Image (cartoon, rainbow, N blue to C red; front, top):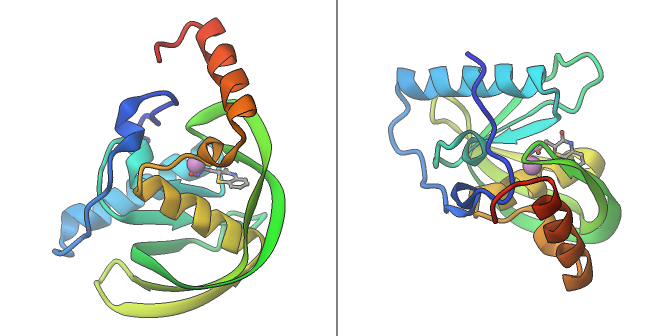
Length: 165
Ligand code: GNR
Ligand code: NI
């Protein structure tokens, strides 16, 4: 099922997601719905927060063919190496892209849909995407990393478009 995506400045995007402790069918259904929603958008990642489910679940697929799904549950970034800067967008902040500084490479501890632990190394776009999604789980949007000047301009643009702040 395709689920509606919350849009900035919706306050529900600011909630801190809770760890998944029980890996039952409802989690599998949620993960499947998140992939469907992400692919349809289309996006390269989606955090449960964006569909108003405040659980620490991320889905990602950075492949061209949309055939390399990655699901991270309870992800924790355990190592952060180097610096990089690139253009980011977000399904929750439509029609807005800006350059954001991130760590270049990271190590992540996470669980799969069965609740099994695994570790992964990520660099480049995958690393950026994971950092972007983990931010969502903590109620942080990519625009929070911008200067106050740019944030002010975004607020103005958002108000103009008729959205409540
Ligand atoms: O689809 C997305 N593209 C993207 C591009 C650069 C950096 C991060 C992203 S994630 C975004 C989908 C999204 O909003 N995930 O939360
Ligand atoms: Ni996003």
